[in-house]
Length: 473
Ligand code: BGP
Image 1: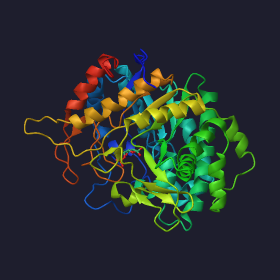
Image 2: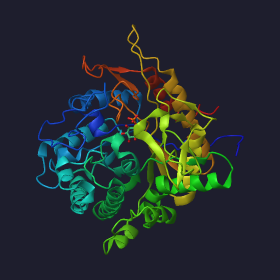
Image 3: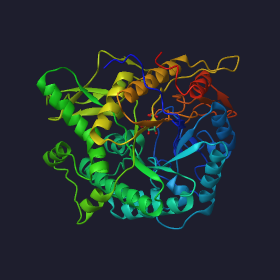
Image 4: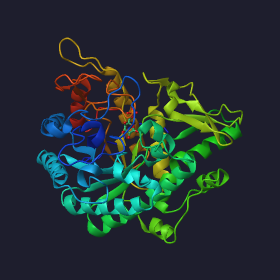
């Protein structure tokens, strides 16, 4: 639908920025922090750094938060490292870790920046992984206890909680994220059991949050992107519905309605990967209610009917870690109407609007975008500037689509692009940069880790001052 005028962003809209603990903090083994599955990764893709120092945010958070304030950020979405709080996942509490996040949150509050806290962003404690990770039902209890510690410690300072970042990507692309245990014998069956356990853990955390902190709000944070059929061919349309169910709705139907999506269930049944559901699980899942939906969006995907000829899998941008497509379910493919970024990810702002409309139509809950952004090889110019006009272009087009979605009647209360500051990509090193703020380091040369605001940060600052009024004009 086209409109003669677009509705303005709400006055108290959360213009933010986003990071995650293991990608930005560094200090991987300091002040009592235990190792996570990310720290214990056996190898990294060739030519890319590990996460030991990252952007050294742990030591420089004051300087970073000051820069966020200069940019005018209204919100900062970050994650707490479970292994700083409880180094082995379910044992002793580490006071130094507790203090770090108190200091970070206090610093944000000093500048009126709303903390939006992800409880768990890929970095499961290694000690829990050794005991079976999410395959072990005990991890559900460990997460509930961890949640209780967080709510007790930070509940008076944090109003917005996100449970688990991109649970769907951990299930679908765990090998790329470093979250898939390479020793799993039957990965798919295990993964869907893990998925069930994570869903129960999330439900328990949401219920606990409402009991302990009646004023606080909590929601899931999957990666949601509408799947297109490659053509109007009815079989392609069915294939898109299959993948939408497996990739997107499985996670949100459960978080919001407390039931398994029927197509996703039929898929798991056919593949013989149905999870074991313990007595009482469905009651736990049904009684938990999110207050909002947070989601990450980078790109859309296009699929067609499965050919079943062994060639259904498609590697996005040639990236073997990000394959999708499955015999008898759907075949992955390209969308000829979209351009691509330097890493082969399709750029689709209009798909972003469609995704917001679809989520809101299905669930009728307020939305916040907790990740969206452009990975690029930024260049530090001789004059010390970073001219990331391509990022401005990407963000502007996506923000405009939020405005269209708001005009469509979708309730959106915040936008936290990835990333507030440069950090280490999940599997493509630190040369793939996303930040508004440049961090002066290379893959293997830490240099001085100096912070430099990129051109996009000044552009975003102006946009925030104008509350997005000039967008879409
Ligand atoms: C999401 C993750 C982030 C982040 C982002 C960009 O899946 O939640 O942690 O890394 O994607 O992806 P990448 O780093 O692979 O470019």
